[in-house]
Length: 114
Length: 117
Image (cartoon, rainbow over all chains, first blue to last red):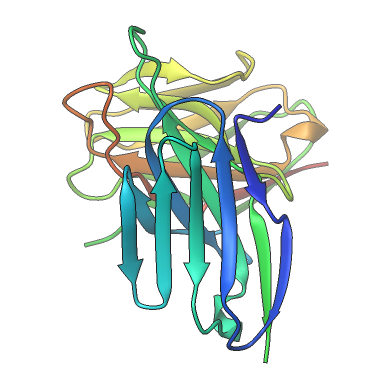
């Protein structure tokens, strides 16, 4: 089982729709990072959060530490939001000597039609 | 201020060859992490460099090696290339956290797309 699971894997929406992408993880984490990847590969950071909720424009990210679950919401979706959205969690094993590392979900391919 | 840069952007090699990919971190960052992203998958952690040493490593064979220079730039070397090494190789830089428990945001470069024929 992957340590980080994203759902859905593919998402198609009409312009203006409210979109939710989910991220579940299996171990305790220090932080959750949402990333956006456009065709061609470049990755842009959207949010980094360790608790609660953050909002930037039409994007909202939430995290529930107890339930080991995070969500990315896009309000009033637009065709330019079409991209791959990737959830990454920073895992640190308490008592360990190694540094934590980012573990990524497989990504959600979002297509927004006009 | 330039962000993270990588070179080359694309590369085509044949099986058995060796390749070197380069990364310059964002100004002020001292830590470089390398990731491999196969088509349709999320990135996989290869290794991380700090203070010119490999600080930790993912589940990749010894054919994958790296180096960090005093100016914090880094190289990823892959020997004896296999078809399965074809992927997008991403470099990310960050400022080292004061405590191993904490995560400082990583900033990603545009990637190098490696094709092995």
